[in-house]
Structures are given as structure tokens and as C-alpha cells.
Image 1 (cartoon, rainbow, N blue to C red):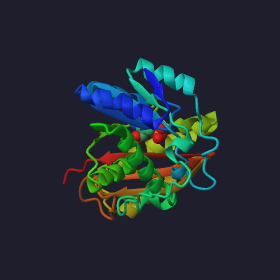
Image 2 (cartoon, protein in one colour):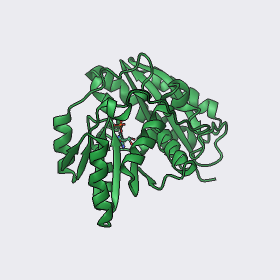
Image 3 (cartoon, rainbow, N blue to C red):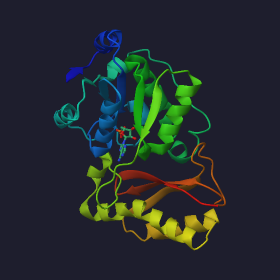
Image 4 (cartoon, rainbow, N blue to C red):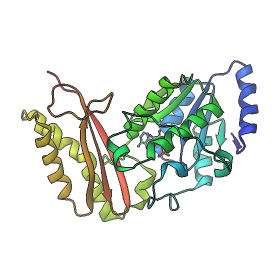
Length: 283
Ligand code: AMP
């Protein structure tokens, strides 16, 4: 595996591969890797000839008071994990390489980025879209991989790629969970053992919804109230949002009439955790 920090150098490296007719796959990350990231790397390796992974903690997607400065990092460990998972090139740029002096462009996707995390983290998806556009332009992969853990991000990036004719296929990977169901996240390290117990309220709330659906509940305000009550019964959990939306455009649904996505964000201690579940509904 080669580690490259300059745009010019990765371009040269990848141009060579492209000339040899090799298919390039790409997994962008912010590092402090876990099985969630590595599952995307393996999928990428299975479907392409060259695997490129980037690690870049993108300041543009963090709001004031968020954890940009304390975001966990262990490049040595990440490097070993990526090497073992079959990565060919690790792109590890400095901030100035991505945002040189005078950088003035912002990419904004309307609609699908408005609700959920877009509402509670203003500017977040502009930061994501701007950096992802840059990374896709730098790497120019045939395929790029994003986790369904960040379901809204995946939909936003699909929209972005379609709207801007970015010639990379955007591929989603399923959510990887710990044995007890907690969605893997780099931010889980912030949790104390007591807080980690409260963090299970996110994934366990899907069962609350499933049970209510079985009982015939169709009214979303009733489902939301059940989930709120359940999550609030956990000492360290503080709800940011609980939303029931259609899985493509992420518009709120009021009555369950078909497949839907439940997405939620909950603060547990200083960690803001997100999770989601796709519910198939037979009607
Ligand atoms: P991050 O480093 O948090 O920006 O994540 C990089 C990529 O890994 C994103 O596409 C995430 O959606 C994906 N990812 C993070 N956690 C998980 C998980 N538990 N399961 C699947 N994909 C994940």
C-alpha cells in the first residue's frame, strides 16, 4: 500500500492505473477506522482492481461547538488495517492541500439534505458535498462507496453525482453493528460504560417500532411518542431528532402506508450518535 498526501502525486499514480485499464474504487473516510469502514473497503476491493481510501477530517462539515478538534485519530493503526484489507493507495492530505488559501467554492444540494441531520447541523451537508466533489474529482473512481449508517449522506451524494454528472457510480454498504446492535462509529470511543448502555436505546428503538407496527399502529405521531418514551427512559440519552421518512426523498411521512425509514440522532454524553432502519411494510 502506498500513502500519498499530494493531489498531484495521487493523480499521477491513478493516471497510470487508468491507462492500464484498471478499475478504480474509492472509499472516503475520516479515519479512526472500524469494521464499518473496512466492510466498504472489502466491498470496494471485490468490485475493483485498485482500492483507494482517503482519510481526511473535513473541517467544513463540522459546526461551531462540534468535535472537530477532538475527533479521534490513529493513523498508524488505520494504516495497518487498510493494508490488511487490501487497500492499494491511502490518500492522506493535509488541510491546506484540500482547502488552499483563497478556496471559495461551496456545493449545496437542496431537498434531500434539508431535514434530519441537515436541519440539526446547518451547513453540514454543504461541507460534505464540497469535500466529496473534490475527492471524486481528484480520484475519479469508477465506483465510490458510502455506508448506509449515514443514510441521508448516501442519498445526498447520489443526488449530487446525478445532478453534476459525476461519472462515478455511488454504491451503498449496509450498516455494520457491534454484537449488541450498536452501530459502529468512530465516535463510540467517547462513551463511558454507563453511557454505552444508554447508546443501545438507538438500535433497540427499532424493536419498539416493529412491535407497534405488529399491533397495527399506523399513526407516525403515536410511533414517535413510543420511541421518545423509550429513549428518554435511558439515563444518558438526549434526543436530537426521531424522524419517519420516505426512503428516497427523505420527506416526512405521517401515516405508515408503505416502506419507510426511521432515522434518529441522540446525544449520549458528548457523543452525538445516529442510526436508522429501513422498515418493509406489506400493505
Ligand atoms: P466516517 O469516517 O464516519 O466519515 O465514515 C466513512 C464512511 O464509512 C461513510 O460512508 C460512513 O457511512 C461509513 N460508515 C461509518 N460507520 C459505518 C457503519 N457502522 N456501517 C457501515 N458504514 C459505516
